[in-house]
Length: 485
Ligand code: URP
Ligand code: ZN
Ligand code: ZN
Image (cartoon, rainbow, N blue to C red; front, side):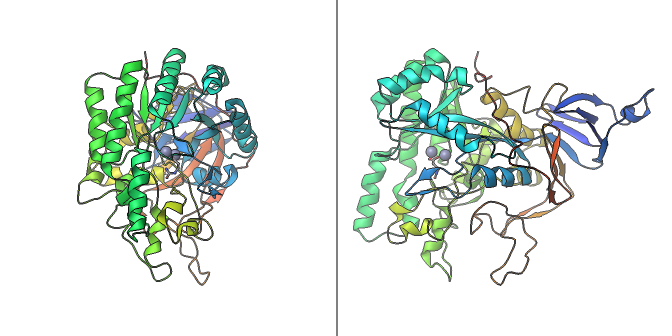
């Protein structure tokens, strides 16, 4: 089966070129100068020709931080692997890296096996896992030795969430020593959890129980301090470090400081920290929910103050490469029965926002707004995640030999984000396929559109129709980070 994409502008992280792209089976096999595929002697006979005139042909998006059906906050994230990866495909993402979970007293191997069971046969797009080590002890440290052979080359620890996933400094030090030995990337949730819990308890005791105070309890100082501590522990152990979901400008300064000293320290932010704020979203109220409306945007790290310059600092970090990655931290919960668990106390609101469908679009809006270049867009949504997590060459680039994971993006198109039906059931013309009863991005307008999503040669989305299946996605065994020598 051959597919030819003609007349498009191929955009890679290295630049743009007018080229036709030939797909054979699951792979990209050739790039031709425009028209040469048809005109040259013998030409190419393709089963399907897709005209991409006026459009960008880019590598499929890679979202390196998702939590499909994660048990968290007394409930489960509302997207299953099936619904979440389908929504991802609608939005131009062709690979996710989710998190397999091990907790204190559980075996790492059992956690990983469970996530294989949950995802296997249920994904519309390709997927891989990072391993959460939620309980560092002799057994889990030993089990880390098996991860590389399993194609799991990164693991996450938490300086937050005491009593759930929390690791203390001694545990972090021991895990980093092991990671250095094995070449694993340490991913860190960098917030000072024990101190945050004290602040949260004091706020609640003062009657400050609404979701807004989630943002106050999780002060930027807690993120800066933990980021610095993680960097120091990584420095001591010579372990590479990747700080996840960064939102505080002072924490990004810590990453920049380490990178200026040539440390293997990397930083990730998320669309919510580029566009949403403490003032607007955590300060929101509605007729239906009152001040509890803000629960829609309770996540950790929290949304931060736009007035204090945190949002602008995230964009700046992406421009200067002090931040290298934009993942979603997709961890959706419905308002009904899920976020509602914290109606009387913000500490009980399940933490997380759903965005897996919108990352490619939201970052493209950064191109339209003059914040990042076209190639930087592709680098952020696909190429860097592929390199950071050991998939580059197979994923993250439009070139012969790579998987045919391709998005045709229309810069003249338009995307209105929000629930597709209004309260009376009438169509809104908006886009939202995630399994949530609200959209954290309601009302966002994007000056661009994902026209076609192709995963390993198979068209999943085209002309507003979904053609995928839950059995298409395959597990990707990853190599070591390609940013490390
Ligand atoms: O609020 C968040 N980030 N929920 C998901 C769990 C995590 O810490 O990544
Ligand atoms: Zn986290
Ligand atoms: Zn997360």
